Amino acid sequence: MTLYFEEEGEIKLPLECETLAKKVVEEALDYVNCPYEAQVNLLLTENEQIHEMNREFRGIDRATDVLSFPMIDYPEPGTFDFLEEEEDCFDPESGELTLGDIVISKEKVLSQAEEYGHSPKREYAFLIAHSVLHLTGYDHMEEEERQVMEQKQREIMERLDILR
Image (tube, rainbow, N blue to C red; front, side, top):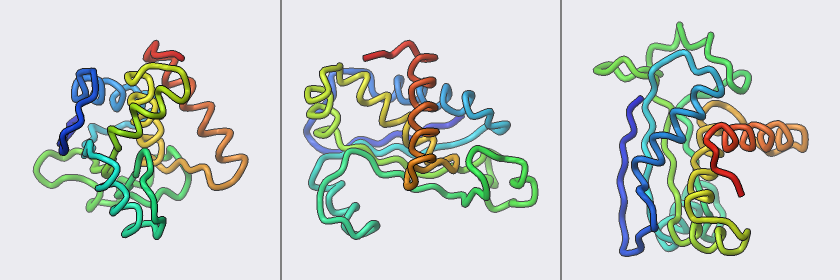
């Protein structure tokens, strides 16, 4: 698994961001039984930048905690068998499955950790697990989807032993 990690802005999280991100992405991909080596891009930014992205890409004029930009349109969440015929889903140089991009607001990680009464590490890991599920076809637009996704997030966090 390759994680392309980038950080911008002055705010720093009190944890080893790249190492933890790689661990969470790998665990989440193992959890959903992704049969391929994969690559993910992760950008840590601040509220102002994620606000601009949220407005530009989603038409929502406010900062958010995390944005996910999947590169693959899954016919069914967490299914990978259809990818055999989808050559453009794989990086031509590495052969890895190109899952997409994750953007996280460091300010939201800190404020939500405080709001929910847990550590910045837990909040950061949770947002990455949440986003990897999006990158593998899961969503939470409908109540049933939300319940499935929340259960998967809990189980990934338990497997990582990063609890509230």
